[in-house]
Image 1: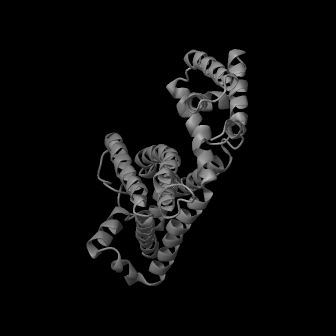
Image 2 (image 1 turned 90 degrees about the horizontal axis):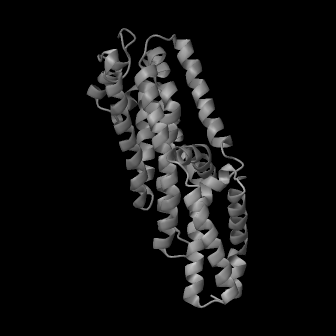
Image 3 (image 1 turned 135 degrees about the vertical axis):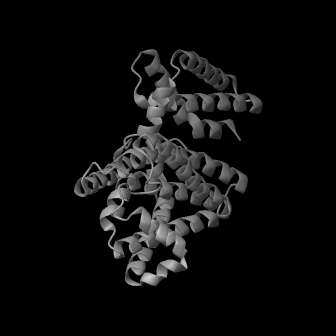
Length: 326
């Protein structure tokens, strides 16, 4: 690549990095400076190495060396603590990346929630349809779990309250396993993610339709509506991450499949990081709130609706004035 084209492609990022370094030096750094500084610094180092390798002119090398030196000084002076990096990821990077990948998210949401709603309605209208997906023994087990006559509602309802923390760990491992399965199977040209989104949507929809038909709505829906805001949304985002991998393999564009997959994986990992946070929150709510009988049904429903609204507002608005890194 000729030097003129190299400078034209990267001049804007160099100038932006110089402004960031100056802001850090003056103590006027904003949140975005801290979030993206490490990645920007590494990019400058890479550009310097390329310029040396290609034998570009001395003024350009001197300029990049000066930027690298200034970045090095600020890097070791302003290392972001882990907590700050975590907050930056939760408040800025994750929701921004979700919005950026809205196409994959939309496809994933239609596959999951569409199959969920369709199967729920069909099972409600045609009761025997549930047995085409779930065995009679499993159906009886579900009815037993959500029987209004039971003291505690939900999976493993016979546990004592002091065992809630054990269930908290169980829910985390179980939900993360399902989400990772949905995500990782996207490497099968996206077909694996498509299958698990439909499979989970159809099964959950069948259970919801059946339990609503037999009169267990007042136990089933108050139990699932709260943690479902985080858990089901996380599953859809995991599916979107898997579809992103599949799309890179099917249609890599002008670059090689390996490079396209590498770029898609960098984005998908950000999505999965947020999915894990969502599933931890869902497990906490499910263990300590959903299975509790201390709150009235109406309160649980209102809280659940509030959590769905909170998730929607978070994904739509949080970090909107920032851009997620690629």
